[in-house]
Image 1 (spheres, rainbow, N blue to C red):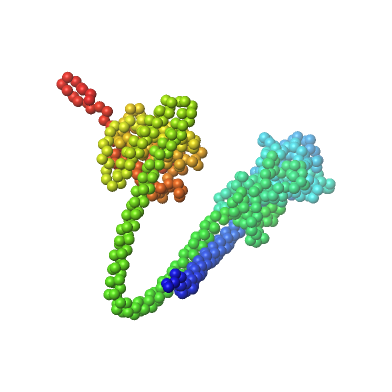
Image 2: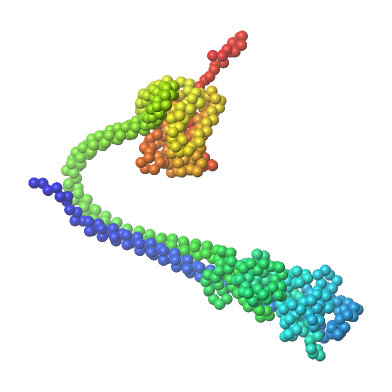
Length: 611
């Protein structure tokens, strides 16, 4: 008795072991490449950040030194004015007009030499008595500035410093104040306003962005206008009350910056996100004012360099691994060559008998292949027949169901019309079966003039139920209305119905569903265009669209024979069928057919005769 148990494979564990070893080798190689990429990215990122921090430190050293020098060079002015006799005299006689005029001119002269924006004297109540800009609009003369912090600090502590927007000039500046206390109590205050706009303009010539932040965390100077007078964090209640009282920022809205701390590299270096962009923020405190100078540098170049370094490192590791694999394969090939030479001699002894056995097997296999080819051709032919007959049969079923409904309503004329259409469909089925031989040779059916408007209307009637069910709007444009093509009517109708059904299927998921049919004459030809508003034809399918069994529809919804048959039918009518995607979306199928000759003009001696 013959056992039906399949033969056992004793080499499966060995094959499974080889597969696992191969998988482990690939995983190891990928791990080495990933590690090289990570290391290259990490070291390049750290190196780039170090260079960026070093450049920022040099820039901050230079800017901080220059700003401290700009602020310190005006500190001698208040003490100098106290030593000038006419200034204390004006504080003793504030209503003396000639003396006030003399002090105004004196302050103007001193300010012209010093280079400050403004120099002025206030009495003990904080009212401005004289100023270097007494003869210009927006002067402080006569203004009560007692609420300004630099005036309060000078009257209470002897000295004051303040940065803010001027009450009368509306221009920001740095204010230095000095109390005049000769002979106690305090008799008045001398104030200097320093314009830092020149300093800010000089910053714009340097790489990166620079910002100056005051003690409240508000940006008061910046190379970026969108950062000025905006706090890095929202101000608390007490800070807002102080700002409301002293008005250091004028009418600024104090909208907080979109500032997020992401990583702290050092005490004075952080990675932050400003308006969603990662930057390196380096800070430096000033000696002459309670402010911080900040340099902002974008991290995009550093990250690009790090990414390039990671790619380079991974490629280098991949090359090294390939070299190692090549050397290993070479050694393995040498060993395999020696083994093959030994096996070749043994195989030569049994070659003759093997050739005879293989020849017999090939002959048997050849017969099986011929049989399989015949079966494949038969299957393709049956699939094509089913595909081509399905459309008329569907239309016949629709017309028969409609006839039954009309018969119940005693609409006999309409029933008769449906029966006539069914008869036409039967005739068309007979013609369609004859068209199946177009795969083997050219159709022998004679071509005749077919009106394009009638062919389009017949096809539209066949797919009417599908268009109504899917909510598809059909637009028909045949110009001129009597345009005709040399074609076989059944074949042309089959092509039209197939193209329209494909367009309806393609637009099922589209928000706008419009099927447009156009026909135009062009140089003795008729150009028939069927376009839709669907998603278009996938680029990988478009070059092979007219091959048998190629379809863009989901599996199970199409055989992929309709367009192949349609193209063959159009070629049998001496035409061509092409497909393309439209720029505005959707697909377009263009059939180029020969035009029907409507009239022949014959010239005669007596005139022209139409035939």
